[in-house]
Image (cartoon, rainbow, N blue to C red; front, side, top):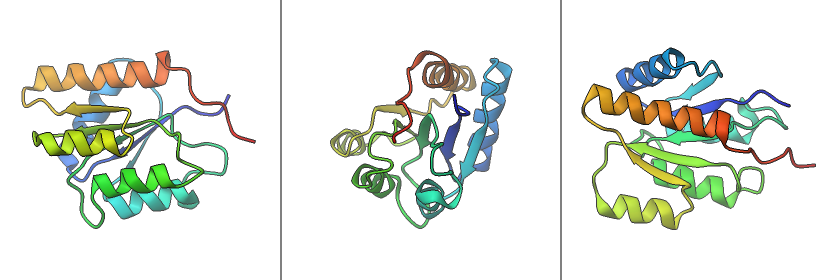
Length: 143
């Protein structure tokens, strides 16, 4: 089985650090690859970082990103054969109802608001990591 890992698309360095610490503290030792804007994420998924076989187990995608928005990244992921079935979880601070609707309309697997309180944020990240890396059955490599 290939390496199971997370692609974190996050432009806030504080949130990035916190997410990585929470995962590590809770025994999720899997690799976390970080891209800091939508263009980097799409380049990575197109093969600029992810090899031909090993896509991430899940993409944790912020919506408010520089260069290319999270919604546009999601749309392009779903339009590309290689990444069409890749699990994408929106992890954002947006409370806009339209962002939730648009995310699901474009094919998000889940929408999680970043809680303001540290304990709640930690619990949300821990749950995401454990579910997507340990419990969820990943899509088999495509041949």
